[in-house]
Image 1 (tube, rainbow, N blue to C red):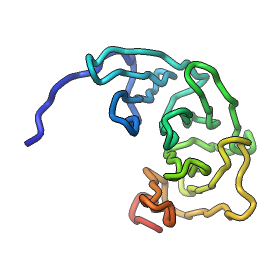
Image 2: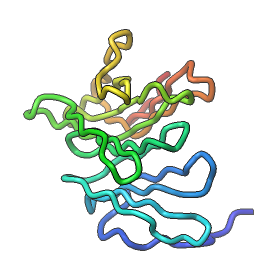
Image 3: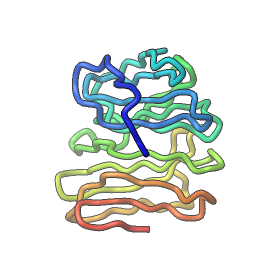
Image 4: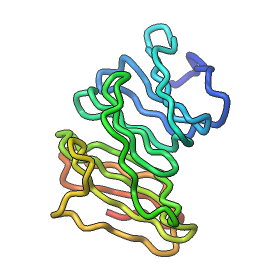
Amino acid sequence: QFQLTATLCGHSYGVMSVAFSHDGSFLLSGSRDKTCRIWTLADTSQVRILQHDSDVNAVALSADDQIIACGTDTAVVLWTGTIPLGSYPLGQEEMRDSVRALDFSPHGSTLAIGYDIDYDTSSIRVWDPTTGQPLDECEEVQVLGESIFDLQFSPDGAYLVSSHTRTART
C-alpha cells in the first residue's frame, strides 16, 4: 500500500517533471521557476539547484546517474554535478521548440528528446549526449496535430514509446 512519506518544498512555480536516480538515492525536479533541483531521499533535503534561462519542462538522468538532462523552453542543457556540459538549442528561433520529454537509453549512449514545434506538431529526435548532436542514423519523427507529453526507452533500448494528445506511438 502506498502512502505519502514527504513533501519536497522549494520551487516557486509548478513542478513539470521528476526523475529518480537509478540507485534510488536522489530525485530531480524540474520547474517553471527555471530550476532543476536535486533532492536526497534519505532525509528529503535539497542538495543542489541548477539554474536555467527558461522553464524546466523535463528532466532525465543517464544510466550511470552522471549526466543530468534538463529540457527547457528552447534547449536541452546537460549537466554533470553542478557543471554545465553544454546547452544545445533545438531549432530555429521562430519555432516554439519547447522540450516536453527526455529519456536516456538504458546503455546511456543516446538521449531521446520530445518537443513541440508549434501548437499542433510535435517532434522526436535521438541525440548523442556527448556531442549534443542528433544521430545521423535516426531520422526526426514529426507527429502532426498532437503535442507530446512523455517518452521512454524500453529496458533493452530496442524501442522508444511516446505519448501524445490522443495516441501512444512506438
